[in-house]
Amino acid sequence: MKPQAVVFDLDGVITDTAHLHFQAWQRIAADIGVEIDEVFNDSLKGISRQESLRRILRHGGKAEAFGEQECEALAARKNALYVHSLRDLNVESILPGIRQLLCDLRAQQIGIGLASVSLNAPTILQALEIADFFDYCADAEQVARSKPDPAIFIAACRGLGVQPEACIGIEDAQAGIEAINACGMRSVGIGSSLTGAGLLLPTTEFLTWPCLSAFWQHDK
Ligand code: BG6
Ligand code: MG
Image (cartoon, rainbow, N blue to C red; front, top):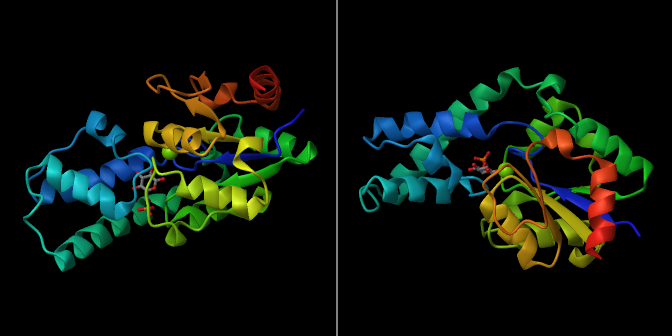
């Protein structure tokens, strides 16, 4: 028995862009007198751009300080900083083990999907030169709700033509693990402080096809 598909989160699973998101938000936050640290940043993982800004403003006690247009401008500035920081991204930026796993999944004829709420996901996959591995990438623009809502994972499974129960989802964010579990997929977490993951691995180096295969068979 094999899973029919494996659906990946992007930031923090395929490549380490989480700290680039953090650096960009930290600069925007500092400009408006709000301080954020790495611990707070964990609560932004898997959260859309606009919702991240709302959380930062709330964190700094400035939830009501900016109008809609000002918020749009702040989010656009953050994105410009973030996109600029992506300029050095290349094949070397793929996290350890991921490329091999993609090759193995393809050899096993298991579907490969992407469930990222990042509007920059297509650009990043191109820069990493792995876009062709993906049978379906859920379109973040079509999904209104951030993780932990399962909408983006459901969209990925639908696009792949598989039932969530027949798939594995891989995430580095607590909100992502909750999204995977909420739609009946089997969850694999990358990191040390996640709760509720069906399988928790410290880093992507441990994320291999034999490991996923054993997890699937054990869990079924
Ligand atoms: C997620 C990240 O993958 O994408 C979040 O974990 C980020 O931190 C979100 O806010 C949206 O990304 P983008 O590239 O559309 O601003
Ligand atoms: Mg992530």
